[in-house]
Image (cartoon, rainbow, N blue to C red; front, side, top):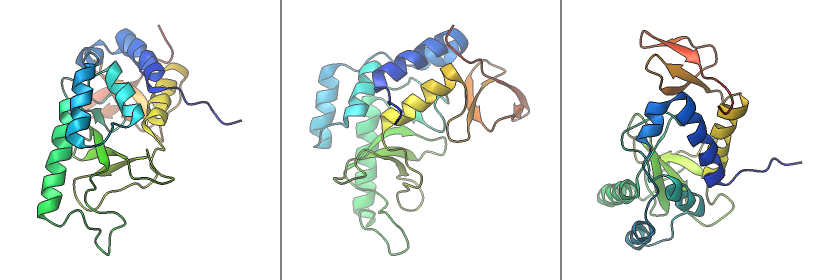
Length: 210
């Protein structure tokens, strides 16, 4: 039987509870829900509805107030950050033929139907692919070096958030990355058994709700 994927709001409820108990500084960086009129304005500026999973996620938290590593490899954007990143990438791509796929790339540098929802530590955007077809809704990386990359893409944002919530509350990892706590009590994801980062200790994160 296929596993039931929790909706983003339920996954966020579990993540919030875990962070409040075990990584309070990360919890403090989560913004309150995005107002409805801000979501509607974003859709007008983007010229397309926000992906359903993203809209639901933003109604839980309007991104974060500072870059955070409590999700593996990505930090959620605010609504304004989504629009700003989309506009920037669209404009840069238009000026540099980045909307056209090059022969050696599988994807163009940018596509207007890629909606950025998070950013990586290297400044790349994680996007939700809104192009029609069987892969609609998948997550990928774009807007940095080379063409867009959907290698081993998550099928949707709900699946990623579900995997994070499950790892924190039931144990295990998220595609090879396991939750740890830094010396400052912040959540970090790394290979299982990793005991330090940058000369500072890491310890396995506690599993389960408080």
